[in-house]
Every structure is written in structure tokens, then in C-alpha cells.
Length: 79
Image 1 (cartoon, rainbow, N blue to C red):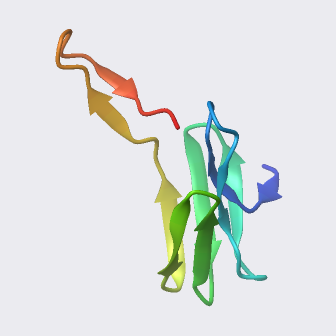
Image 2: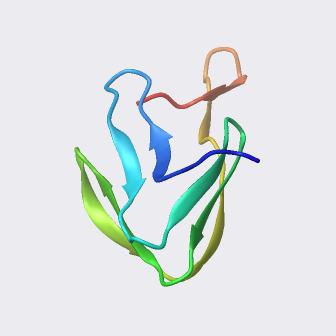
């Protein structure tokens, strides 16, 4: 069984994290196969961004990608 935690994403450069705050919310899985379970919804906090609210539900966490304009290849966005 995958380890449960509250980090949605962690910045590779800064080490800052997007974190689910609600007591009954958890993130399950690691790497590219993760999900956030928030039965009653949850605020999400980050040290450098504005806090936002997610309504109740189950969310699949994917890695944001960007297109390199020079090579036209997709690459992972890093924080």
C-alpha cells in the first residue's frame, strides 16, 4: 500500500510544497501516480502562493508540462 501524506507537489529548486490542510485530506501514492482525497474539501497552502480552496472530492495529481519553444519538446515544469 502506498504511503499517505499531505504534499500535493514539492518544488525541486526551492523545496517549497503545496500542502492539503484539512485534517481528513490526504495524498496517496508517489511520482506520477498520486491522488488527493478530500472528503470535506481542503485549503491548499504554499509558502509563495495565495491559499486556495478545493471542494470535496478525489483529485488526480499530474505534473504540469511546458513546451520548449526551441526544441518543441515537452518538459516538466520545475519550481
